[in-house]
Every structure is written in structure tokens, then in C-alpha cells.
Image (cartoon, rainbow, N blue to C red; front, side):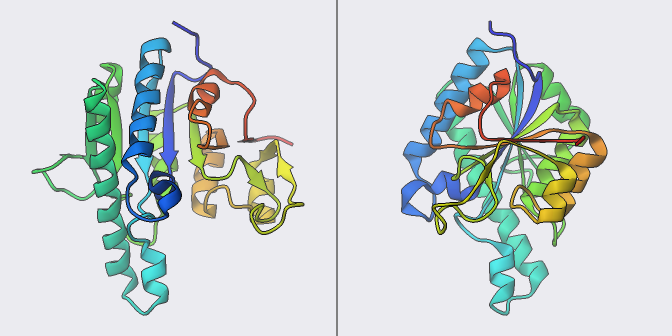
Length: 241
């Protein structure tokens, strides 16, 4: 087995990444490719993997709120969207033979376990993949904050942010071809410059708990493996100058 740089990680998948080129809903091919890569990683590398999935491909709470919906109601709908994505990913992983558990911050025992920190850690120690769904269970908190919070709770050594873009830029690279990509940043730079790594609450949590963040594109599915092994990809966010 290859020796990883990180022994326990949180993989943060955006909902949009699961939608693929269709832009909405779940692209089964993308989900299958992610599941297959995670299976290969588990076979080749001694690493414990927990996953947080966004729900933006189905419903984004803040967007619903902007259109006049009650923010708490909209956020609860967004949490349920993350559960749908988590179940789809669990199904794909188990079809690949990867033992997987979904834990939800909102209790729904018929379809998933409730989130219990010690149980989650025990699943990871037994080699299972754990998917954390339904955000933190509270409105006004994003799935980025969920990833940072769960990483701190389970003692993850890094958060791997898999996005549509291949790192962090000083402006939108889709709209601005001259956008500058950052190879390395510290938490304070991210907060001061308002860069789109994670929301400020999530970045602050990572800073307080010294959890590095690696932002990379999911266009190359092998980037998950490269990040775990410590290869230089995307943008690396850490403390210090």
C-alpha cells in the first residue's frame, strides 16, 4: 500500500460536481466515477475517508431565501437535498463493494444513522466510508461549515475540497481568462481577500483547529488520490505567512 500524507480526511464534494455537465440533479456517471476512485484509493492507500456532500444541484437554501422563502425553511430543504446526494453516493460506493454508512444531523432512522461522533470514528477505524448528511442540522450554516466542524470533531488531518474549478483564483476564471490562480494561501489571506475557498465561518474553524484545506478540480478524478498522497495540486490553504 502507498503511504499517504493524511491518514484521515474529509472529502467535501459540491452538489454541482455531482450534476456534471447537465447542471442540475445527479449524473449517475459522475457518481459512479467518484465511487470507483474511492474504491481504488481504499484498496491502494491506508486512509480513512469521510465525505460531506453539498446539495446545490437540487436545492440551495440561500437561493430560496433570496426569492422570498423563509430562510430556516429553505435551509432545511437544502439539508434534505444533501441527504438525497448522500444516499446516491452510498449506493454507488456499495455497488463497488465499499462498506459505507450515511449519518444525518437530522434524525431519519429509516434511511440513515443519526450523527454520533464516536460511532463515526469507529466506522472509520473499521475501514468504512462515512458520509455526513443534512449539514450541521441547523439553518444558516453551510455544508462548508459542516465539513470544517466534522473534520475537527473526528480529528481529520485535512479537508479536500473537490470543485468544478482547479483551485482558488483572484476572480472567476470562467468570466476572466486572466484570473490568477493561487498555489498556496494562509487562512488570514483567504478571509481578508474574501476568496471563494469556503465561507468565513468554515475557514475560521479550520484556522482555529489547524486543519489544512486543499482545493482542487474534480475534472481529473485522480486528483483525490493525488491530494491524499500530498502531491502538489490545486491550492493549499494553511496557517503561517
